[in-house]
Amino acid sequence: MKHYIIGHQKPDLDSVVAAISLADFFKQIGDPTGTPVIADPINPETEYVLNKFNQTPPPIISAKDIKQEDQILLVDHNEEDQRLPGINPDQISGVIDHHKLNLNLNQPISVTTKPWGSTNTIIYYKFTRYNLSISPTLAALMLSAILSDTVGLKSATTTNKDRQAAQELAKLANIENLDSLTLEIFKAKSNLDSLDAISIVKNDYKVFDFAKRTFIGQIETVEQQELISKRLPELLAALKQVKQEQHVDLAFLAISDILNANTKLLLASDEENNVAQSAFSSSVDNNLIDIGPKLSRKKEIAPAIEKALDNTNK
Image (cartoon, rainbow, N blue to C red; front, side):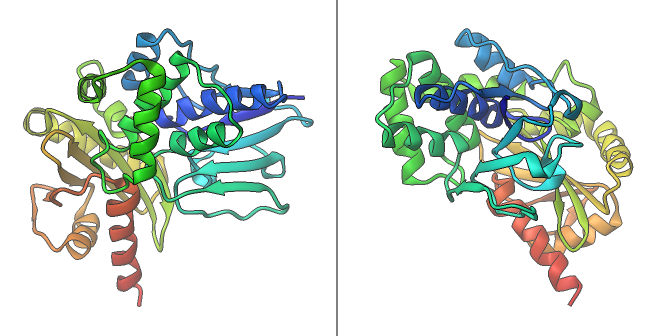
């Protein structure tokens, strides 16, 4: 029997490292069945960080690889649309997440959620609560995941718990300059040269069950204006294609400048234009709306869109 630990589809750094770190936690408390896995190939940022700290990525699995006696623990997500497709919900044993809960299961499970900036922050405090050791390599990975998910501890999702965890993990990893590591991560995250437009749109996305089924992709870059000026037409075409493929009602792509704290939202059609103008009280130009210093999809972008849709349906 295996206890698969898995993040969401199109996993980001926090999702991948959460599976790795939680498996280490389980091993130390005497449960060797914890097995980190991923639902899709890792992105360039995750590849860079894993290579930097000599960590092999978890294997990719599909639902058919999970046997009837196995269990599944979800990290960094909980909603059905974000899970590995085809998994049996009755095999889900638990959730560790920092997002809004949207569960509809037939059995009670163990759930740990915190309104913090990173799933790895939650897992760090599980280690400290049990007085367990964190190796320098794992500390570096967890630190990188926290810095990534909180945009260098500057996102609106960042809490004192994240800042404290980052400082303690930096000590364990013997990393003195957090700003330097953050910039490395930002540059790796911004390396989009090898990606086609579809891959960029789907590089980091989530589908939300709002009043209308909504796709929100996000690209975090240090070259926002260059990306828009060079690739806007193909990104818009890709967003429209993804909207059809994902069978969603609305599709948005947040193009976030993580150095200058600004997000421009790419809108698939006039319907998204109307929702975005209502959500962010700004005007649309060439299928783009500037939503200012909003960097967090979880805390700032998705809730505003959800509220606008709810108001429209009243």
